[in-house]
Each structure stands twice: as C-alpha cells, then as structure tokens.
Image 1: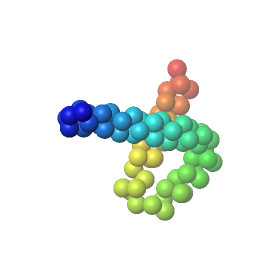
Image 2: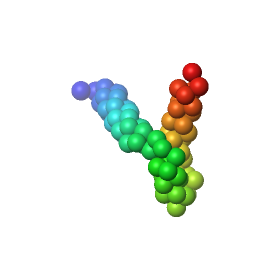
Image 3: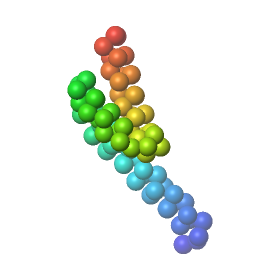
Length: 73
C-alpha cells in the first residue's frame, strides 16, 4: 500500500471517529433540556476556561436555538 493511500485511509478513519465523538456528545447534551438542567451544566462549564468549554457551549446554544424555533413554529 502506498504512503499516500495510507494517509487518505487514516484521514477518513480519523474523520469518522471525530464525527462519532461529536454525535455522542450532542446526544448526551440533549438531555440538558430543562432550565434547571441547563443551569447545572452552565455551572459546571463556569469552572473551566472558555477555551475548554467552547465546544459544549456551542452545542448547547444550537440546542436552545432549535428548541426556540420548534416552539415558535
């Protein structure tokens, strides 16, 4: 197998792992769907740097936005 082919296979395997991790995290965070659960998660995130919490905060914002859009449709 050529080195280029190994590189491409590794790239795609890594992308699959990243997408699975993101989907798992997205699914886990979907459980924080009540105001009190959301406040609990925000308190946990406040203990971490903004850099560390950035990905989770972005997912929570998307969940909140999609919830607002569903409620107003």
